[in-house]
Length: 187
Image 1 (cartoon, rainbow, N blue to C red):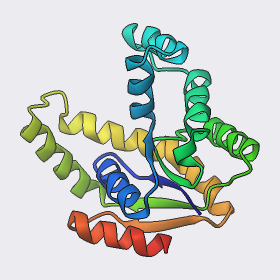
Image 2 (image 1 turned 135 degrees about the horizontal axis):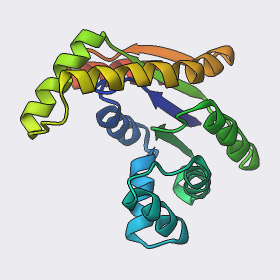
Image 3 (image 1 turned 90 degrees about the vertical axis):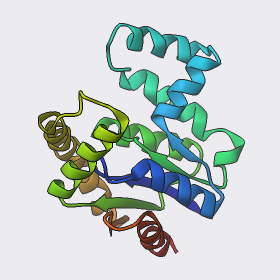
């Protein structure tokens, strides 16, 4: 089974790689952003609840996010495996994910940790911001996002490293090179 998490700093290419890995392994790539959008679009009870927070400019609380992830992982296409991107984001969500998977009689098989040099990521994100006309993505904002990532993600990685399921994969190189490294880590 391939029940995977992909973790990495902003700009490391998680979204791009999640799509490629899920296609290669024939498992769904599940991102919390996609779950939010689908629930909001379909006007589910959880979607309406999440939309209230988002419309007010607030983060969707863990309680709502956890229920959406529970619902998504219980769907038929995730029974054979999945690749989670963007969840869990904190240690409380790791505990909830463990609970969800226990209820489904499953467990995480591997955590793929994309690594990259911060200076390279800053340049990559500044380039992306310029290409996409995102004037709010200044170097200061990008560096702050990288600091927040390091602060919030390190405890999660530590938990999974204690379980012996983290594989560090160099996230720099061409998309195809990184995809090959990730697939090698999974196989």
